[in-house]
Length: 200
Image 1 (tube, helix red, strand yellow):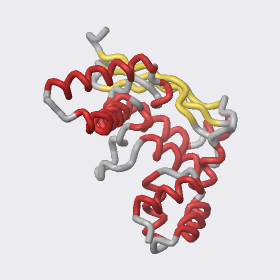
Image 2 (image 1 turned 90 degrees about the vertical axis):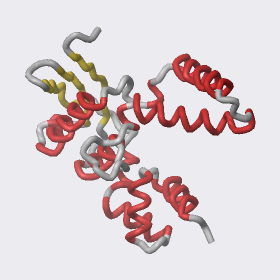
Image 3 (image 1 turned 120 degrees about the horizontal axis):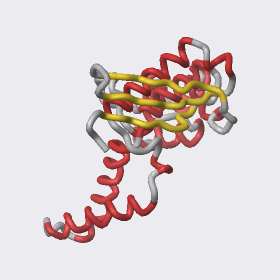
Image 4 (image 1 turned 180 degrees about the vertical axis):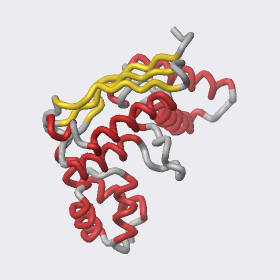
């Protein structure tokens, strides 16, 4: 009998869907992997992953100003067609992501954008902390791995918890995947800048 985690892993490998989508699919299908995959396809989530490789050169550059002009975000989010860029669904997504950037202050779009040197520097800091705490060396790798995941969840936009999700489970990348499934086009965050009054 496969564990819950193994079932989720299997569905992710088969569909490319996010963890939360896989969990929901399993719940809806009574832990039947084939039915779960079918459920994801029906919802369009599995198809959304396939769209991720498609070229996205249309979209919007959006500005969001908060706090009487003390905080601002400029973000470019791309889709495949000008038609979709003009839809309310896409524009609402862009606004939500701009607000996410304003509230959660990410430094990078996704984990693959983080320079290797930054990750290595973080690992060195964690190793120094573990040595100071006299943690046994055989558990260092696992602890460091966990700390790096936490780093990604704080510093990378796609890995951050969506600010409107009270459950603390939906990440920004899940929000985007769901939008891709609904809209039917690849969507990606191209770049962003966050400005706070008085900060350099």
